[in-house]
Amino acid sequence: MKNKLKVFRAMHDLTQEELANKLGVTRQTVVSLEIGKYDPSIGLAFRIARLFNVKIEDVFEYEGEPGEFHGSPPVSQPRSDTKS
Image 1 (cartoon, rainbow, N blue to C red):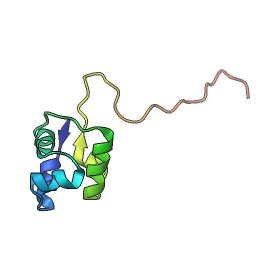
Image 2 (image 1 turned 120 degrees about the vertical axis):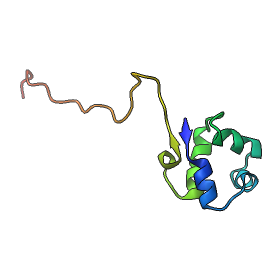
Image 3 (image 1 turned 90 degrees about the vertical axis):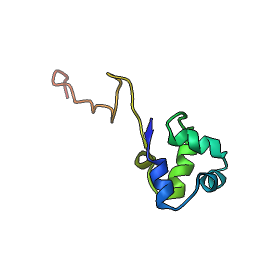
Image 4 (image 1 turned 135 degrees about the horizontal axis):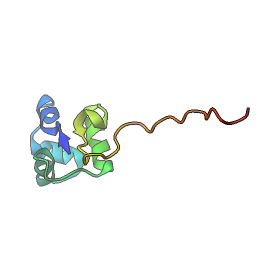
């Protein structure tokens, strides 16, 4: 999963240690997130987004497998062969 955590951290002038303390995680967790070694839990992703006052998808970009579904589910259309 790609992320812009380092960018948001720099924009808010936070060290890795300061960010870790605000999120309640270790500095090593922040390092692992920034280099893409670790994907955050949904709870941690929400805490990060709230801290920076942005949406989760502003910080994290999911990179799924080829052919994997992305986006909104298709909207079903009424069938033309049914009687009203």
